[in-house]
Image: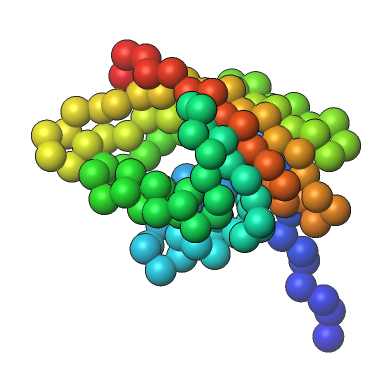
Length: 131
């Protein structure tokens, strides 16, 4: 019996990272936490737009975004990993449930990864742009 092929870290490629983020935001409610735990640990500190979140608060924020949008898309423009350091630039677009309008954010994200390739800390600087 052979061992199953290990799943690559979400931080191993632009495609793996994008797929994990989209799975977290577009997948079923019951998998959101486990999907984000592919990227973070329960001890990860996440700073977004000047606000600091622990994992539980970040998860609450993500669930709120999921509650007001019907779908999400992400376009990663720049993906860099150097050892345990990670930097990425993306455009994140949400289609809103209420009226179908689209809201877009461009963000620069920086992180330090642990030995298991999960973020220790994340600093994301978003700005709203035209969708």
